[in-house]
Image (cartoon, rainbow, N blue to C red):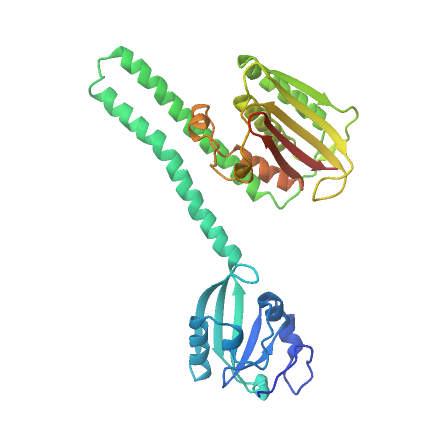
Length: 357
């Protein structure tokens, strides 16, 4: 059996286990027999296994990693392997295995394994790729329409005044749709860039809701709908970004009007709560409720994804970009609040924003 260095000891000769235990990345030392002679705390915590004194193959059954480790203990200078683990939780790791000399040799160690968790980087890259693909897809359709109409107006419909007016109207709608999408993308980018910095401006929620009502009153009347407000008196001011919160309320109320049934009510309430769900602490809850088709339970978790739409055709027809609720989510996150969506198919939906005091 190989000599095993406990992760709790740091006083054997010149080997400093405490130094390795202080490292944020998991580290494992191997001897010439490919047995683990030391594993720091990060390795034990991250990989949820007891390694020391065992052949690496008994604890880490990844052929590429074992082959790289074998090559290094047999004399190779360095190897690097990318690997995905599914247990205890999914992780993407970059593992670097290096030949070593020095104080660790008293343990019989000849190779050092360093595990670097690149899950967040991998996820960010995947999100970037998905985002680019979605933007390209969303812009391709209106651009194709514009090109087609321009070619038609330059050719067959060149002298057709009626067709020209009809096509120009459609082209104007498509151009406005692209402009809205670009505006929403810029807004989303700004919010994400500042999401780590909590806003400190003092904001009166009742006043913001009143202003939003004035902006959307005519829109509601067009659909024969009524905005009903129930604002608790003496709501305390909160720390927030006035413009961003205005965007949140305007977005939610506009959606409630768009997807509600004609000749119904959109109810907006604001009350102080003693505890925000899942976060704790006192806050203000602003709920926007409509009467309509509702949203199926399996679709609720995806509503805040970029470009996700319950009804793509209807959303595009109404001028939606699929980014509104993603913007709402990030704004609320910046305010350290919570966003909750509840819906019953055939009855309607309620979107609730919780903002901490």
